[in-house]
Length: 596
Ligand SMILES: [Zn+2]
Image (cartoon, rainbow, N blue to C red; front, side, top):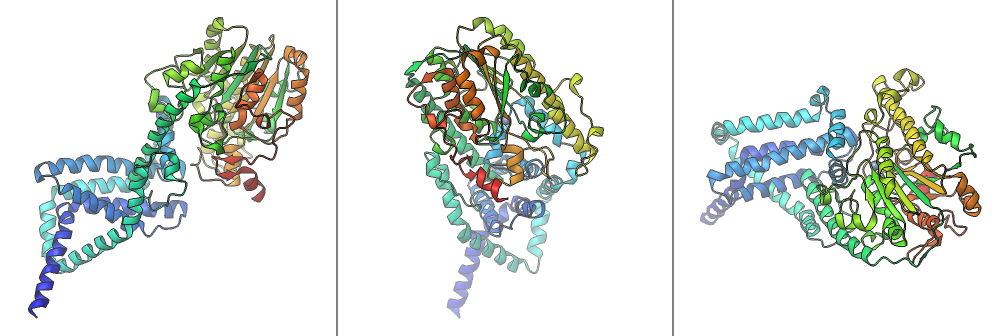
């Protein structure tokens, strides 16, 4: 009997020790967990995802660890540390819920990249599009209510604690809480160990490809994971710099005097008249497909992008390695080869420009573009300001072309049809309006307005691209056009914006990964290089993924180097038409398209 009482006393003491961090941080524990419940249930309600039952326990574990750490501080400063933790916690929770509204997904490393790769102007435009009065009637409103509850509970904490201790079931409640904490520790330790291992990884390979949902089940974990990936990207930059120092060109036959590479933005193939869209969005490009007097535009029919994110596209489309090689850091980038071969390389961008402030902040998107050393290895000339509209890039080109030499590579990087579509074209280009979409019974007027804005941006893009071509009509010139990726704009049930990596339905592929692609040859070029022109025509219907674009560009430039691979050159007779087109290096485009 004595022993029994002794065990009971020990049990109660142990229970109180375990419970102490919860008791002393009661408001934080309750309100953080309520927030956790919202974030666990939201994907199930809004996205019909499977309920991750273990998350109910990992949230308890994580919050318990926070409470435990808070115990290390003297009570005077504990309050301030709690505020320091609560503010980013609630901000992250709101971001997470907001991502469901904007991306149909929880906050994740891909979205972090998207946010960090977006400059201020884009970010303001993006947020303005989604922040509307109705937003506060959404789950964000629930998080705001929890924040208010947290503030009130903090204010009346003493009263709350005394009321709880008076409860007749107080002892049972304490025991249940402790039991939940113990179960949570047992269930969560493996996934939390895995997460700590990820944070200590030395390379992306160490992290591996299969990270369980339990590991990345909170916005905080996703943020830390995203930051880790960006740190590894930073290391990739060091490798990339090193690799460019080793770049060697064997020979260069300088085929044409002008090579122009235009990189568009967020261009949905099915919204291009050139590819059968019912609206006249690309009349000037269409005209050039038949107007041989001023050169000839040859559209390609089966081209896809390897990623629907700008930063990934730039990394892969500039590098001589393909997306599945996953060693981009150790590869040459094509402008460096062109420069080394003797071409004068100009880069004129609406999104990345010569501004040292950006540097590593825009690590992924501007991996090499915003690093001063790498930029000087790759480019002779760049613009220093972002233009309001793409048309201004032509003014930049006109002012920079005095530096041109006999052989030039000019890269234009447009803002194209980037969200927010309305802002992509000046007033005089608002040709399409809501009334022009009466046949779209699947969308409401507000959505029709977005589609009209998108089509107006495409129409304006047609004009800008045509103006670029005009500047090369009387030269021995070739122009290659590709957008970085497509976009979601209410087609076939698709919402607005792009889906995170990992989502590969046929609808997503058609909107976001299928892209327009064409090559224009000037009259002189057609006369001087009839064989290459024939090769281009022969390749028109070949399947192609744009991560291999450098091989085509090197061929067109007459540059020979060790890294050039004939089978990756789209217009070579031995081009590998059977290459698997792995989106993001992981999803087989052709098998998804043929399966669904
Ligand atoms: Zn983009």
